[in-house]
Image (cartoon, rainbow, N blue to C red; front, side, top):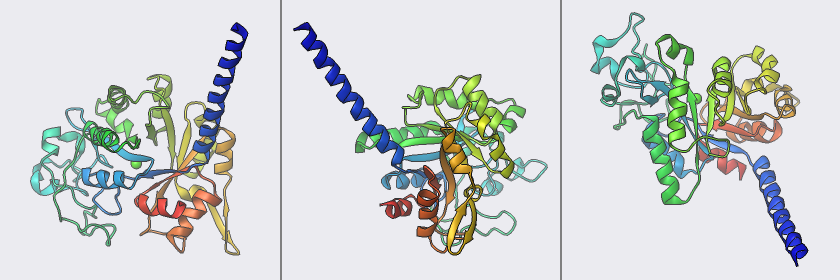
Length: 326
Ligand code: CA
């Protein structure tokens, strides 16, 4: 009888393991779609409205770029500057630094909340970067904190039953250190408070600064899924080192593309090399209104996600990428 029970337990455990293996395989083949700065192809980047719209498109993750305010609140904003996405130069005209720019770090959370956010524009001529996107200066949008955005996404996860993750990036950690601020530590503590602690907690933590991301793993002992962002060709030589602390890389898509020969794209060895080291590859940024060398967005998506076999991508148009992958 006792033996029968042991056999039964072993069978049950085995079934569970098989299910887990099947689930893991499904996860491995599924492409990860990250809403880059929200649904930023349709609404001003990093606004709550852009995040809510992105959420409704059901990507796997929604991205947050983070910069600290004067009073150490992680603000969801792409740059350490404010002047090309807000009306700061008219509301606080006397608060620019000698270089003529306005810095997030010079304003308190309360002051930052007074600013109107707009579609990104060129400060020299006032023109918006993507002419066919949401009209500059229209609508009423505000900056918000990491905590506010997590509460939006976790709240929607509860009310809809979806499980959409977050994909925070700490911006320019060395600039923060120079100003006496530890953005990595502050961000990790908030993530932990909201339940994002390990690789299974639906949060991917990204950074361009390799020293800082290594510190996040080794000194700050984070167990989150870490992605090393990459921008320059020489960084591809660092891959083996990246694999000692990161779980994935986030290369610029041009680091993956080689050239088109007889209508077929050839690729660098980056994706293959990364996969051999066990690193996932999430490339940036796919934009339906900025195709570069591709003749259509469909070609752009299929070439990178299927032919080049990256595991995921950042996109300003999550709805279009998901529709093409279907
Ligand atoms: Ca980013």
